[in-house]
Length: 194
Image 1 (tube, rainbow, N blue to C red):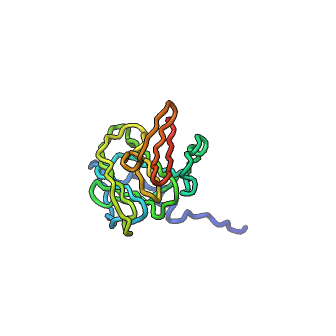
Image 2 (tube, one colour; image 1 turned 60 degrees about the vertical axis):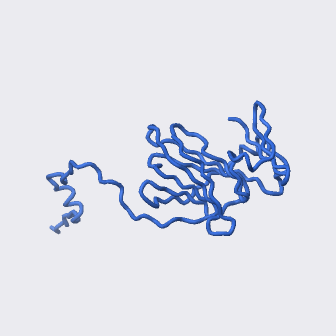
Image 3 (cartoon, helix red, strand yellow; image 1 turned 135 degrees about the horizontal axis):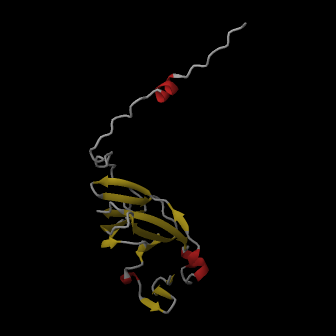
């Protein structure tokens, strides 16, 4: 009578099936986040968040070419947004940077929300064209973030911040929208109320 081969478990299965005790569990709390702090990132558009440990950031983009800026966008055009995933790096203790390396012609919408449902305070600064001759910085200030809200809107490549009224010569508000104008350039920027 021929002998049958008896299947043997491989070493990995043997260890898993014959472990009699669980690995030791440390009662110490999880160590503080470690890792390599990266050097500062560079790009056309950078948002620096200081003290923003519990702030979640999302960015969307709406196309608005320079050739069409003499006419305000319709509500349908304003709703056509695409999600943008910026490069995000922890560059220091409590400091994060979100960078869009190459900005397109249009409006970038930055939204923030508290990750754990608890209010989080952070200071926000935007840097435009950091490596070029057009480089400049705009301070958005310190904000306490609770639920999902708009942090800022930025028109690129002009580097115009929606909240900076000095970039506009006229502002018109009605029940459904706000339109900001610059009569020197002919630009019209319309944002609809939610």
